[in-house]
Image (tube, rainbow, N blue to C red; front, side, top):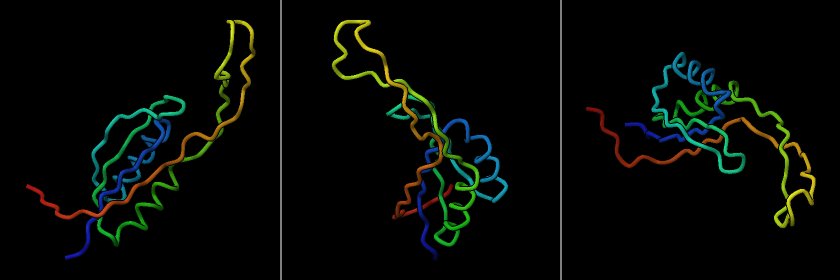
Length: 112
């Protein structure tokens, strides 16, 4: 019996359709959970994917090829802004998108 892993894959909502379509084409099955990023509070999608160890390279390749990192301009408000109108927010570029994968051991797997 080969080892099964649980892959938790967090992708930006702009990438979810493309990556989910390609994962299905590659034969992966997954559960989708809507989530929100902590920094920009933007929509993400979290995919729970069960995969055999031998499938991990293909899984990573599919996710990598379909989740693009891009820059987004955001306004940064200083922590101590003082009176309203006393500051001008500074726009900065931050990377968004891409994917984050967590690969975890699975002690037991059963399908009914």
